[in-house]
Image (cartoon, rainbow, N blue to C red; front, side):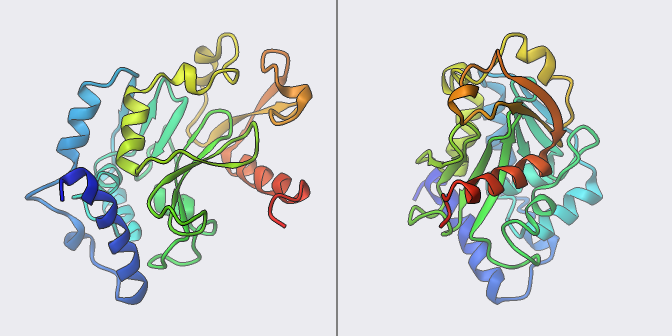
Length: 247
């Protein structure tokens, strides 16, 4: 098994075992002989899209790694331990790490109360990143379908969990190398880059009319305001229920 294909197995083996066993100490999760951060750094160096690595606070990084219970031999563990998060394309996509003043959310703390109740539980999904328009990238732990370990996009323009058929490692490469203008076609307004680069990592743009409505399909005509990302996530879930998606 090569490193790339084994990464997701490492991730979910860790999740499954920690649900049944005592949580591992951070020191046990730090792989000094084969850290995945070296691999991630190589990807970032050759990235076509702008990638900003936010510095990690050592104490927060260690605590976040312990709460996440993922080894640093996986890219997810490496990002949690080595970064406060990654900002892609001037902050359009925000990949969760251990938190930073510019991106004041850690991967485990952001997911607590959403995908699990207590640290150490096996999550049925894990929110790994989001974007400036209120879309969320979610790692399937079994709660979204049978494709365990694959990424879904909780899309603000459809309120659907759209399967991307990629792993966490492939998601990183999607962020680094993919044509994001094409992926987000119709969802980037004029002068978006200037506005997005100024918002905080715990804020998103909220649009009216909603992007998923017929009236809201021209984003340049919609009104927009900045709201907390927590508020947008709760709104998306509530709208799904109101529309009968989760019945």
